[in-house]
Image (cartoon, rainbow, N blue to C red; front, side, top):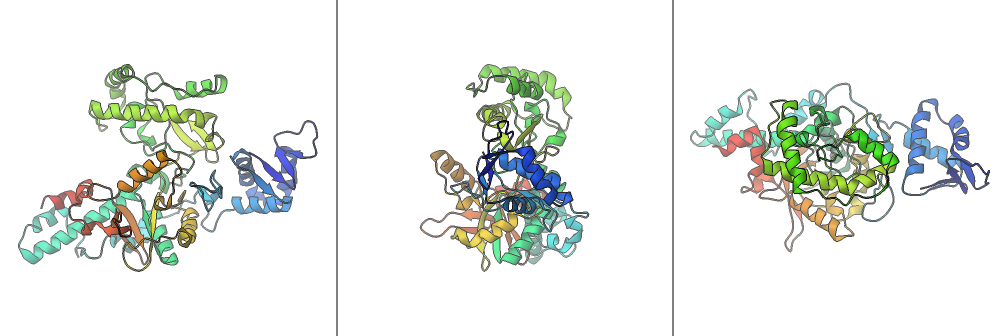
Length: 467
């Protein structure tokens, strides 16, 4: 789109010397001397991102533009850098109320070591912790089969451990502790969809989380079989690849530069899959470690067509369309142009906000949660990318279905619990309970005794089910 200053549009060039245009190089000459030296590189990146964005930025004066660039490019108190994404103050269903972090400051020491008591007390207080944490969960399972009181305490300890394990598997330590501090400061509860364990290392290393602009899924172990260019080190990153035999990212990039800009309508065929299945067995299997287990053919086939459809639907937009101003395709991975050195990983997906008193009472009025959302978007480690899914009001049937599927994925009996962070360092696993004539709410997993599927994903939970 465009950036205008006092009626002048900043253009790539101004060969004809038009008064209403100013060349980018000339504009930068006006701006650069008035910026702090340490910010000049980041300010140039910010200005370029404004110029490439799919919206118009109008500044009344050069002073206004320079003040905006300094604010957007200055490290926050936590050392992070933020940007105004495609949907910043755009209005509509995807409106974003604040800038989002794209570069975080990596702490010098682990939040887990520094805040051990916080993590020791994760889980619902109704289940007592065992006094001696050195006791193995398998020993607790055996004790749970003993008579009466001893068995009751052992069951409670297994429940507490299972909940703790689930919470730790679904959010890295730094973001969880940071969100707990925000919940206490704002006096509101924060419910978040889990982030895959594979993304934790990238997030804790300071990599950016998945931008709101991008819809592609993060990579899972199954993707190692579908893309020859993916390595184990890429797991958890946001990816974009054609799973058919013969696809090479470098050749795809070259074709995008010199070929016709057309949307592919090919959806793949059974012949494509049979060729891929043969390639997996003969070529790909020897390339992967023995620890990477080959999934059943029907599971791989489903994943193959899912990734192929995603690639065909999104490829044009990443290379030339509405993603292009923000996108850097590096091999099979999608990166922000502002961070071409780092992969993106799964973001901390806000679900809903709750009142500070009681358990699971949802705040209905979106205006009441804006400050909390802004704090989470500006948080160094948590770096939320958008608002809560509960407040999303889709404008199309397609998006309405996406919202319905996401909401249902966190309800009992078979859904995945949310990470529910309340004031005063209370962090539990909770289900979303849609209201049937009553208000929606969140409920502790322990108030849904028939919902046991989530327990199987944890060591202690599996042992608990075996009692």
